[in-house]
Length: 400
Image 1 (tube, rainbow, N blue to C red):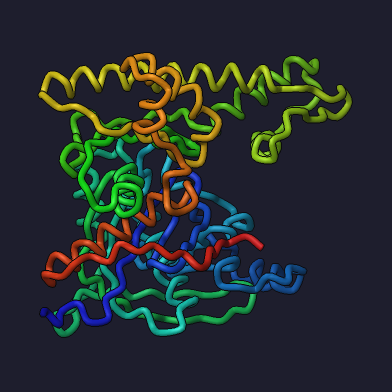
Image 2: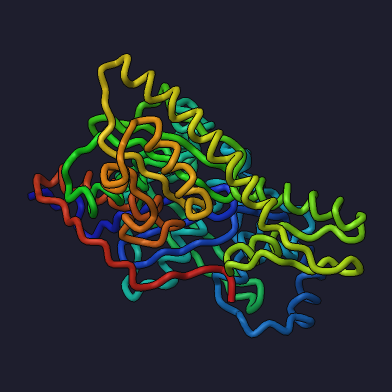
């Protein structure tokens, strides 16, 4: 048995369009995928005096020292006070490797902050946006490697953090034992592999519908088919944006409703919203039309990919329609998929799976699965059976 993995914690890292998520096996941590320039020292001091928030947690008030820029940067919730914000994942592409690395530091620091025992050694399972492609994935890993320092033969990540609300500063060093990279939808597949599939390999076509994008990823014999993988910048945000614009026009251009308010209504199962000065509007028909259009787009891509896989002699065992936005379109896509394959209701129920097949909440499936990817690699290297259990006992965020 190798001792090289003594004390190593596998961590899944999903740098998503709206939120970055981290999982260490028992906890999920997430915060907004945004970094920002800090206030000046004088303004920051004034901000502390004026701040009336009771939330003084590190998660809510985090600043990290950006060695590349030789300056402090705000991360997550704290960026609401920033003079310039930078969303580092947009349209399925990492926009800024420096800010993405900052998010990686933030996630590990916050996991360490919440841990009862020091988080000293980690193995990372990365989820990269599909649009980034393999080359960009390699470049990001190279960027991460260039930021690490070698001490006593170990690759170390030094993190310097500050709680803006309390002005407390801390520095931690974490050894990065290894890093694995996969596309984001692969994490959802790993979550299914360790739960529903009971560690049996099934060819699975993953459709993951998120906030900013939806992606399609065929998994054949446990490997992602890179040539067919794709993501589209047309997730739930696109739906709510279109509904917001339609309401704006229908109400006589009185007030434009924020997409977030519409999203909150949808999540609560409500389909009416008040436009100040114009009355209450029912947007159910608009939402249904948006869902039908998205289902059509997903089915169009699915048909093309199934044909391409068939040409390679590959047949699919499962179609997985998952993600935070899957509930809105699952039935519509399922109906189209079943009709395409000629499956009756029983067959469709068996072979088309949704969020209810996942062992965790849908929005945490990728980061959990990527943690399992790292855990699996440790077991392989140690010639041990992998631990298939998933037991998330805490969810931590930068919100109250």
